[in-house]
Length: 488
Ligand code: NAD
Image (cartoon, rainbow, N blue to C red; front, top):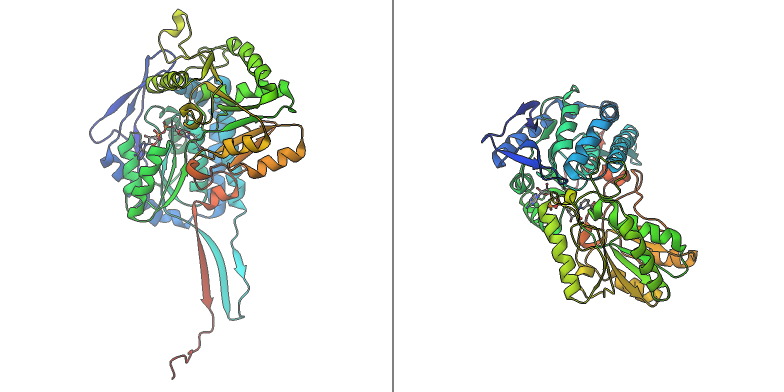
């Protein structure tokens, strides 16, 4: 049985009150680990350690030291990729293929930021000859990093790599439902020769996250999760006006025009919505199809859904695993029922699959609700499960209006062969990512984040590093003379 501990000030330790939490497999509800469950008191110790480390020798590290560190971490992830992928699948229920992809992406993220950090150089500004004026990037300080349960280590990597690369110290708090890969990652970091306090792991629930958001000793909080927690973090951050980065939820339209390549669009509609059982912030769960092809499109989806292989993520033939928790399972079923009550037509799914293997665990059939209208709750709120809601539209203007009529703005996709229309739509959609004739690809070089209620700030890309830096104007007068402004 896996037992996890906290990692504070370079030491593995139990929480002050010895708290633990059973970690449950979403595939069969068995207990797979006992995780240390920290309280605010433990978080305070970790923050203090990170503060001391930031104010100490860590400040003297060079960009070469830190680029080397990120590359070393990437190497260790590659070494342990199979072990990490197994842990991720065990804890989240996602297929092993997905977890392996995550681990490749995580190593790539560390290598990308290693390259970016190594190329940091600041700028010398044009100034009078007796003045040296420089624009410098400096670390922000102590960073509190709070991550969700759907992509536990991937989301952590998007924060840890730029935070450490920019010269900050960190306290990471993964979701207390899925702490196992972040714990293993911490074991990898512990193999390296880092000064105590530079990297701290505090596993626990919302109160630990709240401590990071409230603490006056934390200079930046980067959070990925739901809107409710995001709102409370934003308010808490005003205590010392700490920097915040928020990556929140989405309600992401996948818009199919009649002139699209329909074979590809049908196939990708499944991938957009059912990848990781729909528990993806950018899931394309809101399908919008042009009137003239709507019935045929729904018909083709209806043929495909029953063929999706639901099962344990460790079985090679599995295409979709369970959802992560009992709470999610109940919430998703509740949303489906609410949709039906509002007049949506259940085409497929909406229930636990039949069969003994699905009696334990948080299983759901891939679900299609058709004839949804934009005013329904299921068209507006994030479902975060394997559910497609399908709406029809009559014109480009109507599709655009309906797609943008959401408080969220994370991701959208457009399917068309008309490049002019593709360009118009991608410019007019108010979303942080707009895919045309594709769904889901992202990479370290491109920014990730949302418009409107989907968040504040961006991760990945150059800006994902800049978010962890302060910009300083350093002005040195080499030949000061009395100015005489107020006379002699
Ligand atoms: P959540 O908001 O419940 O929890 C996220 C993290 O915040 C967890 O570690 C949790 O313990 C902590 N937390 C909860 N309440 C807190 C509080 N008041 N103060 C501080 N910390 C608190 O989210 P979740 O259910 O774990 O994740 C699902 C959500 O995450 C979805 O809405 C999804 O769209 C979003 N998400 C967004 C992105 C993105 O890139 N935009 C990526 C992944 C997930």
